[in-house]
Structure formats: structure tokens, C-alpha cells
Length: 100
Image 1 (cartoon, rainbow, N blue to C red):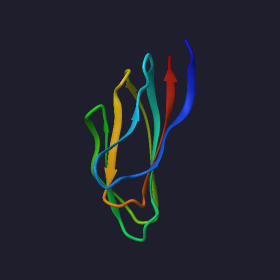
Image 2 (image 1 turned 90 degrees about the horizontal axis):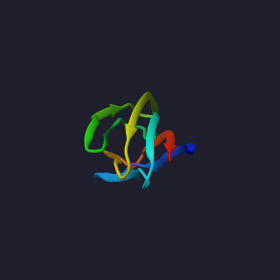
Image 3 (image 1 turned 60 degrees about the horizontal axis):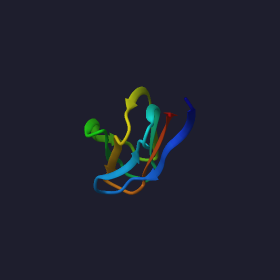
Image 4 (image 1 turned 90 degrees about the vertical axis):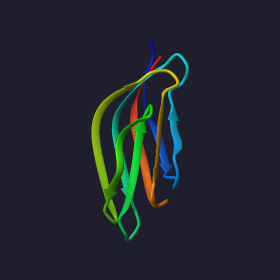
């Protein structure tokens, strides 16, 4: 059994729902940390789902700010993280561990 700590997602948000990460075959992923940043001079909102379950729905993030969320969520093979924001100035940084 191999365990790999890694950055699962480092991406700018799209303005419509997009898959950010898919758990590889024969792998379980544990999400440990989500950081959402907004580099714009105005507030924005974002939505994140884990395997079609809303974790954050149209959640506000202030201008020029960072939101850090520590959590432990397990995703099985082929499950996905998806999300979007009201502006492309929102960035997602999601870290975790892949176990294969």
C-alpha cells in the first residue's frame, strides 16, 4: 500500500461547474485541507462539491482574502471534486493523501 501526500488541485475557478479532481483507479483519497483565495478588489462566491455532495454552496469570500478549511473527507475510486466561482480571480488549493 502506497501513501502519497500531494496537492490534489491548484487551479483558478471556472464560472460554471467543472471537475477539479478525480480519484485515480485503485486509489482512495483523503482530503485534508482546502484553501480558497480571492485576488480581486471585490467579493466573490464559490461552490465546492465532493462526489456531488455540496460542501460549500455560493459561499462568500471577501476581496483580497484567503479562506482555509481543515477537514478529513474520504473519496473512493472515480469520485470527484467539482466546483466553480462567480469570478476567475478565485483560486482553489486542495491538498490530501492518495492511498493505493
